[in-house]
Image (tube, rainbow, N blue to C red; front, side):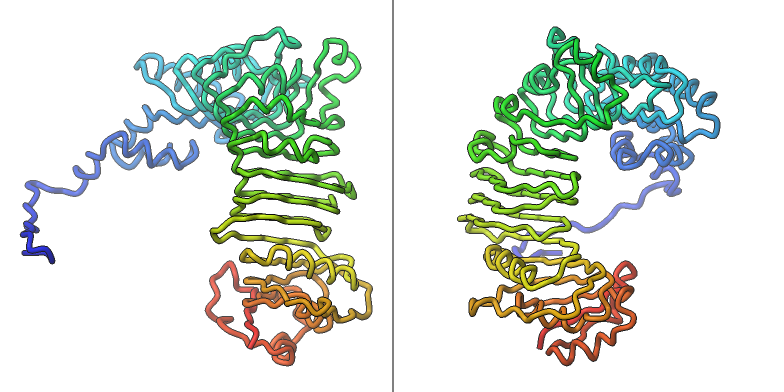
Length: 469
């Protein structure tokens, strides 16, 4: 048989002698089975061991270990024996581990966790994910073998103590690329004594971590008070991290570091910035983010307010804001020649003339992008909305508009005012909260037509979709 170029292809398939199907399935290389099992947790991977002998053998020698005591009916009895025997088998066969995940929710003491982690390090584990429950009043202390590992490439630790000996401990994480710390206590300055020494870091995620820079501070603020003490990151100590591409700061409080206009350009390779703020009614007045490298900015403002914000991001690809208050920006500059996206998700609990004015101003500022707008309507006691006409300026286009929430009494008035602030191409309404509203009739009066309502997927069955005529 010849193809379009005239080259003859031999498409004849030789029959497989004595083919039974089971033999072929049992001849899958271990490397391929390991790859498949890497997408599963420990319980799921164990279940594949009953398929064929090769799958059982692959499960016994997989390079990705996922140990969770919750997988056992009697975790304090069955889990220790299973975990120790598993790692002993790897030692006896002289096998290596790539990733090691240890989750222990039922803990009497931390000796077992320490033993398992040290064994994993000796078996050349390069990726560690640790979630060890506190024992009594004591946090799990990260073993020194972890801090001394020169081959560790990734660490994710939750609820543990990192003893940096108040600056005297030498850390050997020269190859560490990913660091994820949440609810961690550090004896020493977490940034100066640890993070600033990890010069290969590309991705950092920090969530409610606490540092005790001096020995005297541990007597004033014992580790049990971690919930009351949040991290105010000193970003200056991370400037030397030239390879940093991803930075996520969770539960950010009132640190002044993020406001400095001269700070972000110093991170020359930073591509993605995520900031989560949970301090209600805290005002991010004058927030400035200027960076020639940033491509993705996501701000989750649960209770925070952005006022007088300024962004100068010439290479932006996606700008996302999730929160309760409408972000108020004075400037959003970009010279990006490629298509970029804006995703604005706001809970609306104070609907008035100024709210629609702020929305119109924000959308006009983001109009060079493809805008997705999601509005969750809270109960509002405002009886009437004044139609906002945008001062005669062009009405900004919104590609996708999603409306959900509880405002049923004045839905028509709300949407009529909304159409004076933006022009949506596609409108989706969550019908679970508008069951008293005849959406078809309402939107026909407003110049919209329904489409595709009966063809929605299961997870979108409550969405009614409309387009402007």
